[in-house]
Length: 275
Figure 1 (cartoon, one colour):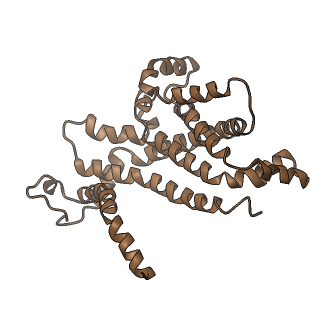
Figure 2 (cartoon, rainbow, N blue to C red):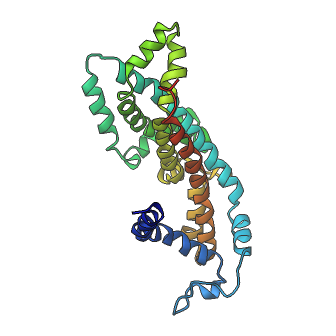
Figure 3 (cartoon, one colour):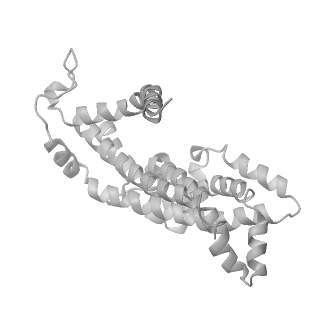
């Protein structure tokens, strides 16, 4: 079988999955660009009679989308950095060293993932209130970082354990310090795991709603999840064109982050050991 034919068969096999994945975004885009009087017509129309790009402009000003987008980016990005800053050395220590109670500690990490934020919401709110962090981004950053830290540590230590320690030992023999071997040999090999962990952590924090609704009070500090909710839960009349426009734009940063880190995932597979 020649290569073009094989590629065509692969694409035909994946076509149903592609359609299933793209369908919700097609519905969002179609609804966001429709005039309001065409959204609930029967029989449904896939293509609007005219493209209402003004829906995006009206939605942007209605919920102050730009400020909410900036708040979400700051909170999610900082939470990911905080989470990785703690999870990387913790995962490295679990993968490279043996200590009493290590298996119990791993079990503890798994058990913490069974706790939903809503179970601890009252305690988290009281703690943040005592610290004076309510209605501040730092409250969400600390909460998100704490909730994702165990998951990130578990993910990283599982991958770190697959990296041969002989590579670091070879660097030490060549005169490298521990920090140099970590930076020049170990971390380049760990790029795929770091990228995957960062993506999953970013998605978890980007989509989180309960903690944001509890800890944030003023509209200037609202994240995107609360702003989009306000279009549905705080109005007597729901403008679905605005809801779909906001939801569609809210998915773009996640797609961009994934596309950017995916490149580093592929690159990391070929780095480190070759050097």
